[in-house]
Image (cartoon, rainbow, N blue to C red; front, side):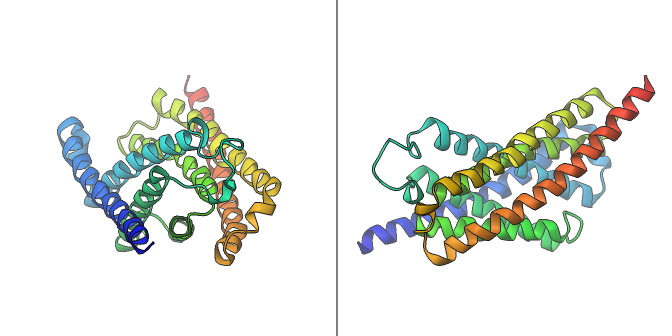
Length: 257
């Protein structure tokens, strides 16, 4: 039993470490490739270059966890209601543990950069978001419980590439381009699906499985009741800002024609 525990702990730590190294590598590659492929990169201020590169590894992390979460939730039979007798709350796999570990490594790296450059890379709302996300993922990883809900939330990271592309286009002076407008529309609908409707389903799933949810260890149970509503309110607030921004962009585009 001790060997199993030690093996799991080593796997968790390796995944977290890989997530941090992955962020560093992609950060450096983003700067290198941007310098070679995008002439405007050299004209950016040092602060803008840091954020440009930071959003590079943010995008890669979002793609990886979104694809992995989608696979684990819909394609694999890990969380299929009828696939096994084990409670859906207690189901986990090597892949799901790895994804959670990598995400902790990412959030640690990103949070460290946010705090080091505060508030250039984001204000207190980003610190709160990352802190709550890391705390929830950590509890789920070490307990092996509630991973189905963590993966649902991680899938909402699928909107991050659109957020980052909007920032990149803005800094590159392409705010009036068709790509900026199309990305804004994609962000609006992507956010609606992945961060509004998905969270509604999240709470619905919790309600119909509440007898199982109640069996999660106390700290995990109360965290599951408190953290997702906070994230949902933040998502709703940001969705309101996205909607306002899209309306403003479409209005400008219409008047410029």
